[in-house]
Length: 476
Image 1 (spheres, rainbow, N blue to C red):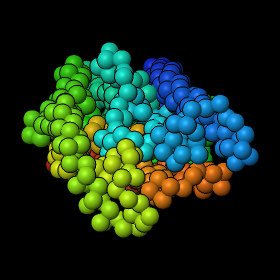
Image 2: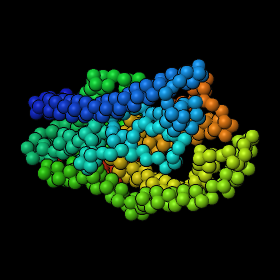
Image 3: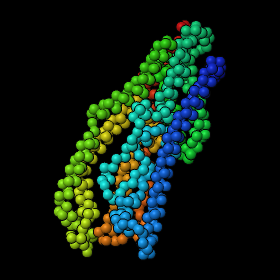
Image 4: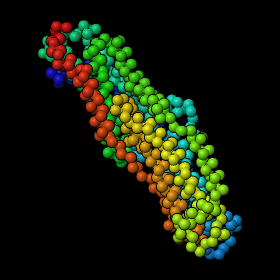
């Protein structure tokens, strides 16, 4: 019986031009979204390459100057620009902390249009309070980016609704439903088979077009086969959810216009209203402290530290006796006092930064909790994780930059206190930053959550009808 329904459904879809419409529609959407996503990634790569080129030129100049100094040649530079001084290297020739895009970064823009992907932490300045945000067009932020994540989350459900909203009601309105009574099958079983067939057709078309699109525009994505496989599984789960919703609406309402309005209403609730509501609740329950107020408090702490430099220096030397060897208090200058007070600065500003980060984490945890209620939130979080553009990734990037800035200072500050000159051999030993993606995707957990939600809705709202309505079609 299922085979006969499959053949009949394929013929029906071909005659109604639905297969052609799906092929053309999904192809155009995926091609444009992938092209747009790749354009954003290309811009990011070009920006990084430009910064890297400038860094290499500056480093080559520094190395050439160091060689001249060691040979006793004149450099023509003032003393405060000589790279033989550790603090000159630390402030004028910092390393670049780069966050390179992932293989599937074209998939979802995520937070990549809000945050920078390269930083140069120096020995001077509060690296724990670095600003990682970038100036962005507010209109673009309002409307978002047209990427694959947008197509999958927002537009694919609309195509599914148009594809399935009148599967049962059309047969009833055309008067052809009774003609199927010769078949020994109930209305609900017949409808379930049609929905399964259309789900398989829609999934196959989506998979083939997506594979071809990725192969044409971003073949590097196949280097990350596990993430790619997880992407397809999540898409299958998301499509299944919307087919289950359509199946339930077809059973409960069974009227074409009412079906369409109900499904559009559910779409608005799931992909628009719920995410916006959760975000608003998070901002209301856990408002972030004023960043301007935090900056002012940091400045006040700095001012207080400047008045207590001698006391701070004495305490610093007591805790770091290895740096005090051979140095008298009268030989300490600006840099010595600065690094002594910087440690105090970090300790006193920790509560301010911790409060700010805590509120952000509470907001993010609230969204993560509600993502198991709204498949749209779940998909957005999952696709951002696969693309490496989620809030988690950028927070971890900030953490890695901060860790590297401490490593950078710890290498140069002892040279300052011990009055060592920076040489070519030291250049070869300079610490380098390497970004590591330490965020777990949790694809299987998210997929399982999607399946559980779909099965729960099916059992609660459709399974009773599936068992109860064992009625031949001839009786309708």
